[in-house]
Image 1: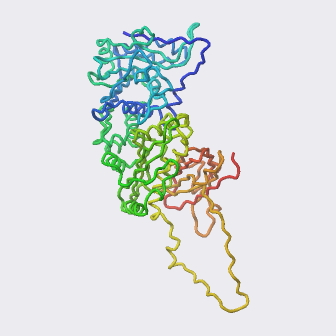
Image 2: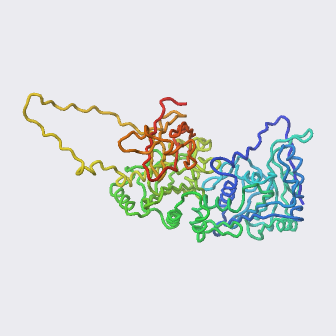
Image 3: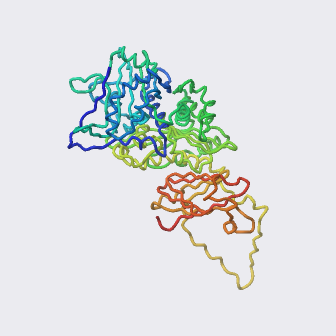
Length: 608
């Protein structure tokens, strides 16, 4: 039916192995979540426009003769896997093989020529590594996403079957991603292909025999018939990837397009769509996501343009009161204070390196925080949710969303994304190579949601220093008009206001520490020393601290999470936070909610 083949590598060629494990098992996402993100992202990019994208995940086990048949498709890989010194144990147990079938519908499939590098989807999917032809709203930019399929297999292999618009039948190929390896005197390339034969120009020809493809589909449970799209089969599925992990990944990463009716996902017998999502999320959501607010935003995005539009663009300057009339600012404040959803369209000036400046836009949504709820921010570029961008909203006691759907802004922000699509990197190579002043432009975009909050929520958050004046007042002495000792008051010298570099935010059972404006001028790394104690009346709480109150070194109930920083426990009530960038964040919970916690945070004079 097909055979596995690796290209040989001339001895003079530079060898660089795909370090795919590091791409998909990291602090941002684990392998199961990365698989979900890449699959649905690629399917969203290939939408046919005939309805919502539908993605199917089906886990199953092949046993007996079926497992033996599937094992025969992969046995030829064993010498190459052994040469890489990878684990060959999966080949020794073919009584049961875990597999994962992934299929998308209402998509166009892998379009383009089979026998050329034409820049289309087929060539990009099978024959490009660390290169991507995607732009605009399309999700992936690093050309690394497809490596998650081989990473999810214990034998580092997968099969892909596609049906394209206009094709009479299906096409099937396979791929494995190993390392450079030697067998005898021959050095082989990391990428190997499973295919029928070669075209005259040596490109691998996919299998097109429909009877053989139907035999393979029936064996592994693929359901594609006449519908266009892409089907993936991952054999010898890696441990830790199960239905719960996949559903959790869908809920955590694609709630926005699902609630807006643009995406439906089927995991085994579980169907996740706009109607079932909220019920499923109650069981599988692992973080604080106010899905009611997200649904309100998704409805607003589908319904109409925002209620307000900034009178000037951001890109060179950040969003401020100068972008609105005085009447608009008052209306925005009233709408926010009333608990209604505030929606604002903000024009963005983009400066491509080789083209004239262009105007795009982002849409901002803001809502005051309901009683008992926690702050939340959604940062979205098309179907991609950038989970780690939420830090840009730290300190805002509200619900917020930044939505970038326009083609031009999506292209700019896509060039800024890290490989895991969790945050925007102002130093990304594609960003620097494609745009003028990209760091300044990205900063104004990232800060715009927090800037809008600061503009319209300031009246509710403003400190009133006179609120207790009638209760605690001291009568000023009357001026004396006689006597020789009367002196004129000395003028107070002007002191330049100090920009706060460390901000402390209390929360139930703990606190958060995040950067203030002054942190932008720091040199990194920088150490912040943090002392903790329960408050006491008439005594210094730090001097009266006792390990029986809490113990950071032993107390299992204290939970510490940090970003862009490293936490060290110096003693039972002292932490050292080693921060590595001006986007650091510390979140500590687990203290007695019936007592007031005192937090002192000071930056060391010297970096370390």
